[in-house]
Image (cartoon, rainbow over all chains, first blue to last red; front, side, top):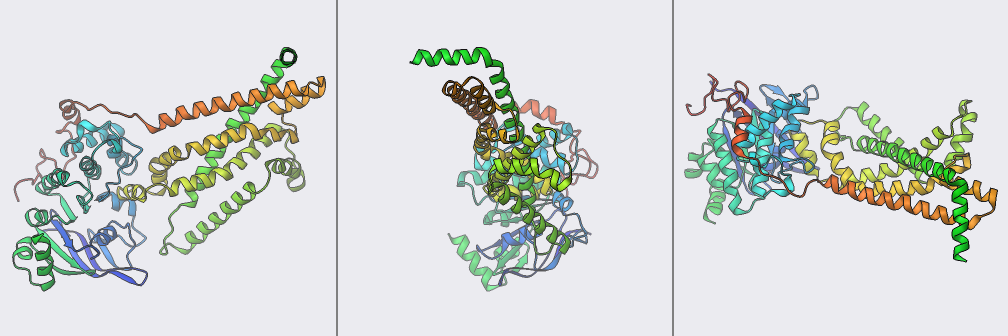
Amino acid sequence: MSEHILEVRHLSKAFGSHAVLKDIDFTVDKGDVTSIIGASGSGKSTLLRCINLLETLTTGEILFHGQDVTKGNINQSSYRAKVGMVFQSFNLFSNMTVLANCMIGQQKVSGIPKEEARKRAIYYLNKVGMAPYINARPDQISGGQKQRVAIARALSMEPEVLLFDEPTSALDPEMVGEVLDVMKSLAKDRMTMLVVTHEMSFARDVSNHVVYMADGVIEEAGPPSVIFTNPQSQRTRDFLKRILDT
Amino acid sequence: MFTQLLSDIGGLWEKYGTVYLTGIANTLILAITATLIGCIIGFFCGILQTIPCGPNENIVKRVLLKLIRIIIRAYVEIFRGTPMILQAVFIYYGMPYFFGVSFKDIWTVSIIVVSVNTGAYMAESVRGGIMSIDPGQFEGAKAIGMNHWQTMLYVILPQTLRNIMPQIGNNYIINVKDTSVMFIIGFSDFFAVHKMVSGAVFKYFPSAFLEMFGYLCLTLLASFLLRKFEKKLAGKSNYELVNADQLVMAAGTYSYPADGSPFDETSKDYKGEAK
């Protein structure tokens, strides 16, 4: 039996009177690779940001191993340390080298000694192919390299779930491949991932679960084979037709 | 004419050289100490003012934060909005009235006055510096679990420092010159030496000339050093690639990662390929 790592229940989020997410329900199991697809403005990124508590939800709850993390009595920092996040705009710390970017969280949040943090950082940087660049600073490397470092930074916290917020959207086309390759290798390693993406090939070929969102609700969810070949909803069909034809 | 001036200055220097030098030393010590303490005050206010406060926080925290912001605001407005020379008088001569004690040590009062004054300006500079940092930096830090203090200390403030270095330089140079108003409470800085010496030997212009030159040297030196420091803060402009083979050895792929992590291929629990 698989274990629910994350469970989102009746999540709603409104900015003022504008409802962005309406009554979202879904679960993430260990080892799942879930792709969230949908048009811009459908609330995908907001959902991800809610899960990482970067936005406060209006109503609803988020259960991590059965425990509600939106209530005040849980330590948000340690929750965030276990749920890594990779951003569209990388958000690497520009005052630190690549290596320090991957060490600081381990040392300050998880209290790992320096030597061990260094080893671990280099291990994961090696994993994403960025180990030779440990002495570089973020503004000295390319977008694709930055994103790979950002993935290594998230991994070096040894999270249970990794959230990706459109990780390839800010990249030049020729750099998209290198980042997707890293994500594919993570998927192969059974890392639990939740990916907001416009890369339909990734959603179709790599993930084992696809969620289609429209106007702040989950329009349709299921395995990629169903969503991409035999979608039940008319809106899903229209969306996929539009995006796959171009 | 010109030779007359030079010989006058030479005479002054011969007789009072050490006094002038002591004045310079006092000015420097006061300006440096006060600028440093002022920076610390400024950064501290900056951190306190930017503590995030959502509508979901509990009422005690919200009231407390509001209070802190009001106090900092008042501090900044009062010390930025009144002349430092009056602040010195207020604190030095006001203490006996309010607390029944008076400062014996002019140094203490001077450092307090100049620091607190600098701090008021720095608080605003730091606030501006923090606002100019990309919000993504805060989110990146939050996302790996850092709390507000850690985010500030390791990520935001180092970048802020780099951005407001020119402002700090400004404040330091202003302090080198403006500490001269501390003569009002009897602090013997570089300018006080001028008053003392010229009063004794009636060589007003030669002494003023010497002072002008001295102050200019102090500030030019400061500008030079600050530029150097700014360059150092900006970091190296290039980097060396590290030999990948050595790294793999150092990384110890067998000793790491820890048991049970998704990449631990040596672990019995490893469920990489098999599903």
